[in-house]
Structure formats: structure tokens, C-alpha cells
Amino acid sequence: MITWLVQNKRKILDTEERVKLSQETENGIKNADMCFEFCLINSTMYMIWKARIKIISAFEQNRMNIKCF
Image 1: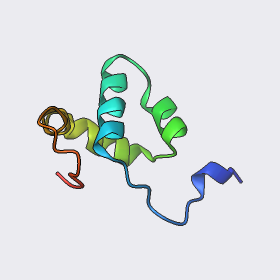
Image 2: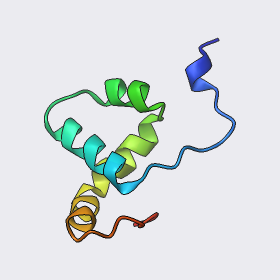
Image 3: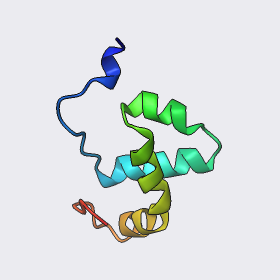
């Protein structure tokens, strides 16, 4: 069994990591590669992709402690 798929707890991404994920997917990097690098599942990447405008605007306004959008 692949060990990186088995996780006991949810991973919490901060705003900087979410901005990095959204920018790299806009630049053409595959979602599967990003999921493997950050140990995420596809649905998490989809939710970040859907909320990318909110994430980037929150990052630009220096609201670094935002946990949910």
C-alpha cells in the first residue's frame, strides 16, 4: 500500500500554500503532480481551484490568518 495516501489527520494549508497551488496550476502544472507534492487529494485541489480568486485577493490584502473561505 502506498504510504503517502494514508493519513490520520487532515492537512491544514495556510494562505501562502494555497496561493502557490493556485498559481502553479494556472501555469500548467498537473493537479496530480501538485497533489503528490503536497500530499493532498483531488477534491482539495478542486476546492482551491474554485476559490482561487478569493484566495489571491485575501493574500494581497495581507489577511494571512484566514482559514476558510
